[in-house]
Image 1 (tube, rainbow, N blue to C red):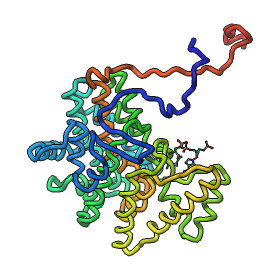
Image 2 (cartoon, helix red, strand yellow):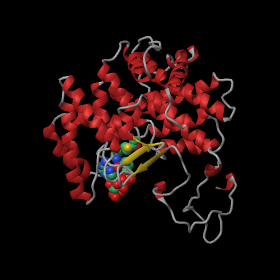
Image 3 (tube, helix red, strand yellow):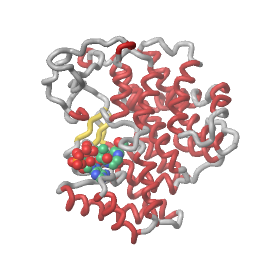
Image 4 (cartoon, rainbow, N blue to C red):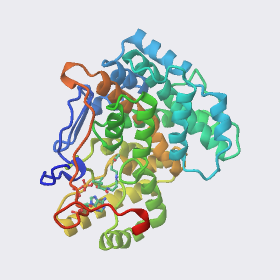
Length: 392
Ligand code: ACO
C-alpha cells in the first residue's frame, strides 16, 4: 500500500526529476537556452540542421559536420512504400496528429534494429525519425487531399523541403526562411509535457520509436502543442477586432481558456513569442492580409488586461499564439500546425531520450515511478472482502 500522507505536487509543478545538459528555461527572466546558447542568437543565425546537431551531438557543427549531418538527414527523408500505402487506407478526416502517432511504430516495424538500445543506434534512429516525420506529415496532407505525395528534394534544406513536399511547389524565400526560424524556436524546451512523456517511456528502456510515439500523443493535447491549432480556430471564430471584447468576457466568465496565452513556466513572457510576432506582422503585410496579425495583437492586449482584472495575475502569449497567424500566412492549414510543431520538437525529444538512457554519471538512468495518493474505497477500517461473481 502506498503512503497516502505524502505531499501531492499536482501536475509536478516545480518538482525537479532529473538533471539535463540540453536546455534551460528561466521562467522569471523569460529566457530559453539550448546547450548554453540563448534562443535570441540561435533563432535567426542558425539552420534547423545546425540545431539538430547541437541537440543530438552536443555542439554546434563546424562546416564539415554540417555537411555530414545534412547529408544524413537528406538520405533519410524517404519513407517506406508500405507506409505510404498504409496512409492511403486511412480516412481523409483522420486527425493529422493521430496519423503521425500511427506512423512512428510503422517505421519501427521497418527497422530491423529498432530494439537495439545503444547510443549509436539511438542517434541513428533519431536522425532517421527527424528526417522522416516531416515527409510523413507532408505526405498525409497530400494523401487526404487525394494528391500523390511529393518526393523530397535533396537540394532543399529541411524547412524549405517540408513546404515543398506539402504544396508541390517551392516556397518563397522569405517564407522558407521564417519557417526555418519556427523550426529552430520549437526544437527544444526542457521538461515540457511531451518531452517528459518521451523521457518517461525511455526510462523503461523502451526504444526510440516508442518514446517518440508517446511524445506525439502528449503534444497533441490543446493545453500543450495542440494550442496552436486552437489559436487559429479562436481567431477565425472571433473573426473581427470588434468582437474581441465580447469573446474575452465570455471565455473568462464561463471558465474557458484564451488559447495561446499563459504558460506553466514563463511568468514574465515567452521569448519565442517575441520572435514570432514580428514575422507574423511581416508576412501579414507581404500577403496583404494583416487581419490575423492585427487581431492577435489586440487579443493579446485586451486578454492581458481582462485576465489581470479577473485573476490579479499577468498573462503573456506563449509560443503557440503568434505561430498560428504566422503558419496561416505561410499557407499551412490549421490542423497541420501541431504536426509542424512535432516535426521540429522531435529533435528535442530524441536528444532527451538519448540523455535519459545514456546520460552519464550525473544523469544515472532510473525508471520513473511516481507515487499516488489512494482516495478510493476501503470497507470500513478493513480492506473489502472479496465477493464471488455469483453472490454480487
Ligand atoms: N485562459 C484562461 N485561464 C487561464 C489561462 C488562459 N489562457 N492560462 C491560465 N489560466 C488560469 C489557470 O486555469 C489558473 O486558473 P485557476 O487558478 O482557477 O486554476 C490560473 O489562470 C493560473 O494559471 P497558471 O498557474 O499561471 O498557469 P497553469 O500552469 O495553470 O497553466 C497553461 C498553464 C495550461 C499553459 C495555461 O496557461 C493554459 O491553459 N493556456 C491556454 C492553452 C495554451 O495556450 N497552451 C499552450 C502552452 S505552451 C505549450 O505547451 C507549447
